[in-house]
Every structure is written in C-alpha cells, then in structure tokens.
Length: 390
Image 1: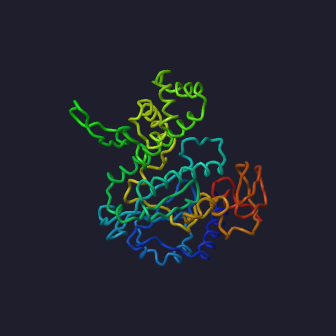
Image 2: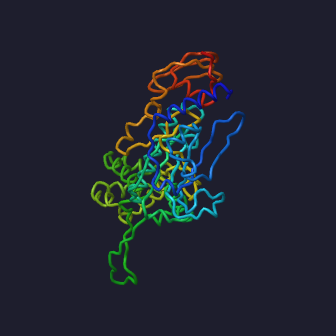
Image 3: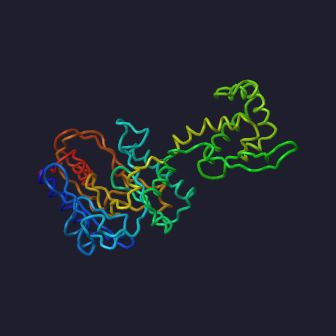
C-alpha cells in the first residue's frame, strides 16, 4: 500500500467515524482496548493494554485516530491498562465464538468471496443451534466481522466465571470432539423379568443435543424405507454395514407395523436401529459440528472487533445483526458503509478479477478505473488496488 492510498483510506475512515454513533460493550471501562493504526511498510503495529479512560470518549478517539482496526477484550479487569495479563486482575469474561470463511471445511480456493460468506453463514446457523437449543444461552450478540465471517458474543451470567478448561468443554461439544456414542444415549429401566438378576433397560436417542441430531438422520432413513416396496426397502437397508438380508427384512416389517418406536428413538426395539445410529453418528458429527476458531473461545483475554468499526482489510463495517434479521442479512450489501456510497473515485487495479459488492458485479483488469467508492475502498483495503490520481 503506497502513501497516497494509506492517506486516502485513513481520511475516509475518519469521515466514517465522525458520522457514526457507537454503542460500546457492557462495562466498557473494565475492558482492555486495542487498535491498529495505518502504517507504511509490511506488517502492522498492534497497540493494546489500553483502558477506555486512556483513549477518551470512544467516538472522539475513533474520529481522531482513524484506526485501521479496533478491538476490545472479552475479559473484564480491575486494571485493564496494566501492561501484563497477570497484573490486570481478571474478573470475568464473555464467551466469544469466531467463524472464519477461510478456514471452513468445504470451501475451496475457487469459491468466490460471496460463496465463502454464504458457507460461513450456514455454519453460523449450526453454531446458534448449539448455543440456543443445547446450552439455552439467552444473551447472544451476533456480529459480522467485517471481512470473512461472524462473531457470537455470549454474555449469560453463568458463563462469565468459566476458566479455560470449562470453555474447552463447550468448544469440544460444538465441534463434536471426543463424543462417544454411548454417552449420547439415554437408558430407561423397564423392569426385571423372572430369572433375571438385573432389570432390563431400553436405550433411546434423546430429544435434544447430538443424540437428537443422530435420531433425525435415523428417522429420515427409516421413513424413506417405510415408503418403499418391500424388496426395495430391504435392499436399501442392506447398503449399510452389518445389515444382512434377514435383519433387513425384520427391520422393514418393523417400519410397517411399529414405526412409533422409531419416532420415539427406541434403539432397543430392533438391533438394526442401534447399528445404523452408530454408523450415522460419525457422519452427523462431521457435517453438523460448528467449525469455530477454537482458541478464540477458550481465551478469557481475547480481543475482538468493535461493532460499528471498520475492518481495515475490507473497508466493510463490523455489524451487529439482530437475530430476527439474520436470514435477510447480506454482508456484501448490508455491511457497506453509507459513507462510501454515492461517490466515484479513480483507482489503479493491481490485481484484477471479478468482484461482487453492494448487489452489483464488476470485472476489472489491471490499470486505472473509475469505480464506486465503496468498491475502490474494498479493493484498496484488500491490497488489490492503489488510489489513482483524480
């Protein structure tokens, strides 16, 4: 990035901050603050160990410094401006989750920026399913990171004092790490019978959690089999390991006469069902886990981007997203700052290609182009263009 480009971006970021009202996080004065200024040359300068009182009123600080990136801590401290973590005096921390499109399974180098963000949004829904349904967290804030993904801030009181090991357990659960099938199954004592030394038990896939996700897959298969002619249904079941013709026939008849037991998740109703559930478990965990950036969630001192600030690597806004608006949220439209709309600028494209932004598509070759400012800022921030001479 040359000096003309840097000066332009820093100036326009300042214009944005002068026009923007900020809602700081709860207990903002107890948090550590950090930022990255615009600098020439390779690498970035990371300025941290600041308390908000050191920076001044948030809006005034941002308007004055016009930083490239702005962060605050998940943790709250006695002395947030102390220069070492041990001397800050940790009190408690939010639980932060980070989804990054660049690191998601299933994305490839051939995916467009828009496609990667769509894949990341799918992963976000899976994460929210865990947080809202499995853990029943209520105080959640969803944030578009301004570049490649999403953050979720959990501020329920019952997580604030969790240490790294406890947070690691939550991470392992949403990632599906170390889950044992038997631990996902509920057992119900159904009473003993004559000659038995111990009561009999039935095994059920539960109504919630990972067990319910496996049950859903089992139910879908058996419902499919139930609708097939007998010969085809038996053949479908025989596609799975350990299911021979005899077991498949019995299981098929079970779907016709006692499907309610499958609906209940009763694995003891037929041994084929438990066999299939075990086979599905690995696949379900693989495709339904939330591929979060694990160290972010276990770190009680993590710094995270400030909603309302601009991402210096894209020129897009770090946006809070109300839960009811998430389905309609389009980051390449809704995170484009109004400050950069309505103007055209000249840029020198150094890395051309096809780009989608603000519901429009552009194909730019290397060289000088007059483009909408929001696209120019995006390309300059991403290192694919320099500011041209007007």
